Every structure is written in C-alpha cells, then in structure tokens.
Length: 446
Image (cartoon, rainbow, N blue to C red):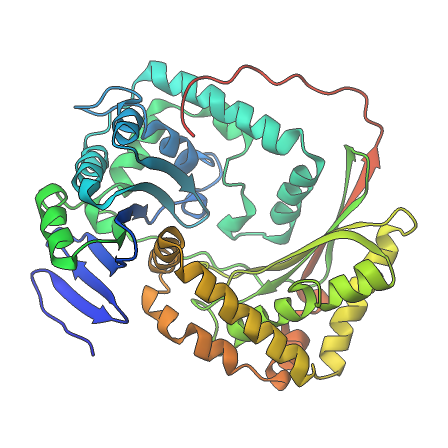
C-alpha cells in the first residue's frame, strides 16, 4: 500500500517510510527493533562525477573539511562529541555521492541530527585547517595510488576507457588539481551542493518513524533550500574500436585490466539487461564454484588472483571489469586469451540451469545477510536514492534477478562484451629501485 500526503510527503512501502520536508530534504526511515541502536546517514548528491578537469578531488577534500569546524563546533569537536556518546562515525566520497554517518544508541539520535544539521549550513573553512588537510589528502593519494602499481594502472585504465564521461577521473583527484586547490574552491562547492534539497537523510534502527520526522523538522527544517543550476548530462561518445594501453611501473608481478562499457538501471533501454549483467558476473566470478575460480584459477592454473566488478546502481553508464594477475608460468597474453575464451563461451552456449540457480541463490543469501545489518540497509537505500535509481527498486530486486534467463545472459554477452566496447590495460613490471618513505600524517579525518 502506498500512502501519499503533502507538506511532508510520505510513502510507506515494505516497512520503509519516506518523507519530504518543505525545504526539499528527503527523509527515509526504516524501523528495525532488533537492537536498541540506530544508524543515521546524510547523503549529498555530489561526488567526483560532478567535477570537471581542473577541480578533481574537490568533493573528497571537502568531505575531510566537514570535520574541521563549524560556527558552533571547533575542529575535531564533531567526532569528539559522537565518541563521548559511545558512537561511531565516518564519511565517504564516491563517484556519485558524498555520505556521512553515525552509529549510536537509539536514544542518542537527536545528537546526530543536531551535529549534522550544524555542518550542513554552518561550516567554517579556515585556511590553516585547509592546508593541513590538503597535505593529508595528497599523502593519501601517494600511499594509495602512486605507491601501489595496480592502483596506478586502474587510474590510467579508467582515464583511457572514458573519453568524456566524468568517471574517467579518480575520486581522490589528480595531483595537479590538488596542488592548485584553494579554500575558495571548497567554499564554492559547499555553497552549491550542500543543501537540504540536495540531500537524503536515511535512518535505520530502533526508532519510531514519526518521532524521527519530528526531530528532522526541528533540526533540518529551518535550513534554507538552495537553488542551483541543473546538472548537465555527460554522453560518452560511441567507442569505435578496442582501446589498449601498456603501463610501465616498478612492480613485482604483471597485471591485466579489461573493461566493457555497459548500461546501468538508470540508463538501460531494456529494463532486464542490468540484472542479466549482474547474473553474468556471478556466473564468471561468484565464488569458488564460478567459472573463473574453477577453471582458470584451479583448473588451468592461468590466474593467480582475479576480481570482477559491475554495479548496476551507478548514475551513468559504467564498466564491467576484470582485473587479474597471471600465475608465474603464464603471460598477460595468455591470461587475456583465457578471459576472452570464457566470454566467447557465454556468447555461444547457454548457461546451465544449475549454474543459474547457484548464482540466484547467492544473490538471495547476500541480500538476506545485508538486511541483517542496519548500516548496509541504510547504505543500499542511500546509494540508490542518491544516484537517482530510487530505494523502491529494492522491493523487486530479487524478483528481477530470479527472472533472468540463460537466453538473456547470452544476449547481453553478445551485445556488450565485444571489442568495440573493450578497454585493456596491461601492466609491464619494471625493476623496483627504491621505496618512498611516507610523510607523517596530519591529525584529521578518518
């Protein structure tokens, strides 16, 4: 049953209640009374995919600065107050969102709302704190990207795969952009995107929905909405052939990345295709019984390690990726040939009912496991809402996966897993001469 009313629009579906405050803030409440705790998450519709060249990394640096003081909170006081209440808190930046969360005793939810509403519109960006935190981010980039060969390859791989899509840039930003970043850049970004009408507040836990709404109105309701220009669309040009890049970096082992341009729920012209792609990834790399592990890791012993990636809930068209390290007795060319042979097999031969049922059972088990966690319940709803898919897709997710047929898996393999949609990055190991000593980390965020 769906109930609708205005001046705080609400919709109840599958034990989730949705409200809209007059200033545009969306509130989603999932009551879960199994334990006297609550998870509160604030999601902003802004991430690295909202940036352009010259300002990459802005969303991530601003996320750091959200812990560095407001009109009524000193730097670090937000985290200290949450810790004093026995709570946990952190934040994260993605391609399509920036999120902040607290996990507290249910009776302490008001503290979370008071602090989050404060930094939604009262953030202070000081030059001194900015310089310290920017140094932290630069060192984070050195440690996580520049000192890790596979991370460097991944960055170059995505920049090669996408010609125009903002998914070409790293979430942490290019170092040249970080070097030129100013407090004014962050102030502009904060004023443009950090507003109630660009945010979703997700609460999961031992709460009453109407009581949560009253708290939200008290703390977030007075914050004025912000009128910002509509986000311009980014249409990636059609790829006209296979892209290949070879990367020479100091490393011990070779590494291969392959990625095919594919649609997501937001962009698919045929609704079932993203679900078929999800099942396809499970057929290839969904545990020890999947084809990659059974045939290429243990069977032919061509692959040492492999990971497969695809998310159907992103805002824009994305990549279905394979990232692998060959065994010492096999080359990158042999690894690539083995992966392509598995794709050709999907294109030519229908998967068996047994394989299909195994993947569907895994998806169901994973869904049940995630529903056992308040945090991941909130994460799934927050991501879907912020990327524009909408949390209501969760009600039909299992049914959509169960509806996938062998013929549909074959169809998406034939349509999307082709060379004209493919980008390949090969890492060619070079001698390791010296290891850079990391710089001391400034006190700061998470």
